[in-house]
Length: 171
Image: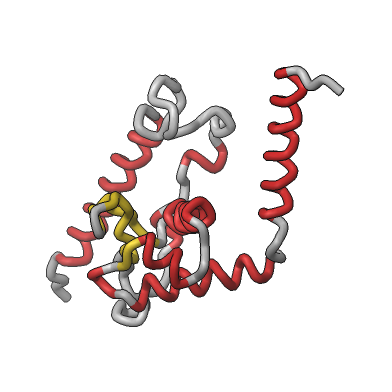
């Protein structure tokens, strides 16, 4: 049986795809979620000094590829930051939890719907085209004349109300 280079490459690609699917399906969705939670908890406990990705992978018995994917997932969720660092002569990442504002420290404020009353975006005919992601897009909140007019008008109304409320009342 003669194996051509094309057959060999096809076999290698197929093996890679199948093996990565098998490896990816080793853990159930629940245990993957548990692992992500445990990793995030470990990073959180490390505090402001953070933890190195290589050490995290060792402590959870993850290879660098799986560890990188897991950490990338946490970074995409904006839960952590990765800072490139030299650790024991090798480049790795220092993982630090992003600082969040504690909801407990803030006083609860009543919701004021009047701030968004009359917002043009809700009934705009260009809403489906509007995007902040593409700078060349002519329909974006940054370039919208309708939003600008609404903000100026709302601000004027707010200032008039502030002046009216702060003026002394004579009886």
